[in-house]
Image (tube, rainbow, N blue to C red):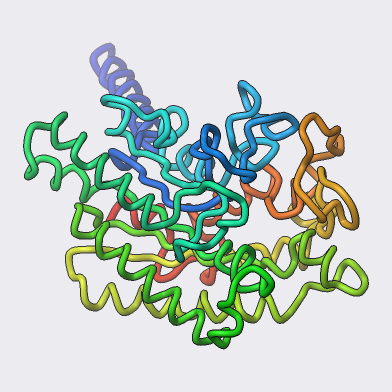
Length: 366
C-alpha cells in the first residue's frame, strides 16, 4: 500500500513538472533575433539625434512608456514592441542608433520616421533613413554578427532562424504621392502605376536582405491612411468619413504586396514570406470600436486643430486623459491600446484575413 502511494505521488509530481515545462516553454523566446524595418509607426529612437522634424523624443510622447520618451511615436508601446513580447523576448529590440556589441544578436530596429520605399520620400521633414539606408545598416550589422560568431557559415545558420519585419509604404503616400506641390509622383504615375513602382523598389531591397541571410519575412501592409485624423482634418467634409481616394491607393499597394508574397514564396524555396493585413485589422477597429474598448476613432488624443489632426503633438502639450479609449494618439499614429490589438493579431491571427498565408506565430516555427 505504501509503495503504491509513493508511485502515485511520483506520478503527480512528474505531471506538475511536465506541465510547468509546457507553460514556461510557451513563454520562451521563439526565435534568436528579430530585425525591424519601417517608419514612424515602429521607430524607437533612430531619428533622435539626426536633423529632422520627424522626431518624438519629448513629452507627451512616451507618457505611458517605462522611462518616458524614447523616440516612439505613441504614448506607449508600438506594434513591434508587442510582437517582441509575444515572441518571448525579454525587453525591447534596440534601435540601430544605440545597438552595440552582442546586443545585435537579439535583433535590431532600423525603422526611421518619415522613411519611405523611395529615397526622396519625406525629404521636406529633413533627415531620415530610407528603406535602402536601413538595408545598408542591416548589412553593417551582419558584419558585426560575423565577427561575434566567428565565421559566415555560423552567421548564416543563425540569421535564417530570425524574423524580419518590414513595414514601409505609408510615407510614400503621406509624404510623397499625396503632396503634389512638393513631389511630382502623382503627375508621373497613376495610383496603380505608382503602387507597381513601389513594389518593384521594395522587392529590390528584400532581395538584398535575402542575400544577406534573411529567410523569414513578415511584410506589413499599409494601413488606412485616409482614416487618420490628419486625412480627416484636411479632406473629410464631416470629419468622420474616411478619404476614399487615399484608401483606394493604399489598397492597390496592399494587393500588390500580397501578390508579391505569393511570387516570392513560389520562387524562393528556402525562404518564407507572409503578408500582414494592417488595413483590415484597422477596419475592424473603426467599424466596431466598442468591441475593443475604443470610444474615439476620428481624432487624436494629442494634437492641434480639427480632429487634433493638423499637426502632431507639440512638446509638453497636455494629451487626453482617457488614452485607452482613443484609436489615434496623434494626427497619424495609433495609441498604445490600438498597437496592442494590432500587434497581437499580427502575431496570432484572429481572422483568416489578418495574415496570409499564416501569422507570425507560425512563421517563428517554420
